[in-house]
Length: 341
Image 1 (cartoon, rainbow, N blue to C red):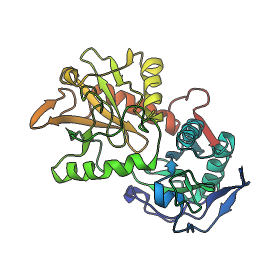
Image 2: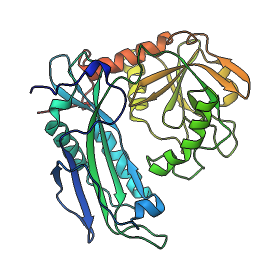
Image 3: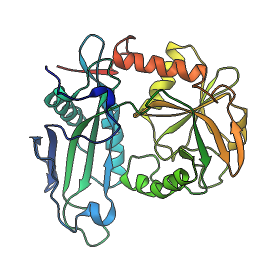
Image 4: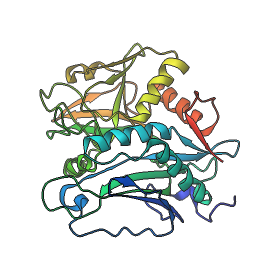
């Protein structure tokens, strides 16, 4: 298929409307079949549940053009399962997981001219989301919902390479124990906006959130999980019931074990031990891994010896291996790559 006339190499990480999106409505206790539409406008009641009580959740994933010219989507089944978990926690009807994957594939296929060409550094970002659409004035779940999927071409998260960032320890809490930190609810991200803008105003790229109960253990940032590397090349990731189960993190853990032969620990990580790690990274869909060079703890700096000036060696191998799998350089594990045909 002929690609759109877009300056792929200079795309930023922002929204660009594409030709088609998927829409399905839930009413009278059942989901309709849903269909592709060219209409990018959402029309809902002024009293819609999403506007009054933030009853909404979303997902994010990417489609790529591989080295051999195929269009592929990375692990959409895991996004479907995570969105189902989010819906259950927010008292929203689960959109069937097989239908979720089908809708994502159909949106990518319908917008294949917007999937950036191989080697451009750009990708097609896919955003499935759901929200309460009917009028709700009392505090209760909506009775009608809309599930939508749109796609937009985006440039690389990093312009000019993945340079180490400086983050700070936040005084704010991201998620409470037994709260909604483990799901991809819109309200979690709304709560993170003031802290991240405050961090930016103070010259930091992100926040490190500690656990709300004791403020002694590492949780995550506003939109990414942590990955640490010890001085003897062991990969360590924080484990907590209030951390979002990142699909990128889970993939990187598998890559570390099965492709690179590294020892991996998923466990509680105490803030006191962070100073002893050799490398630190933030992982998520947008950038795969963003290297962290320094963490500022209220004026006291924690510096990572293998990541101050450039991405550390272990994090580099992790990133290169996972992106190699996504782009078709490296053979993928069974079920990781969904080919759009």
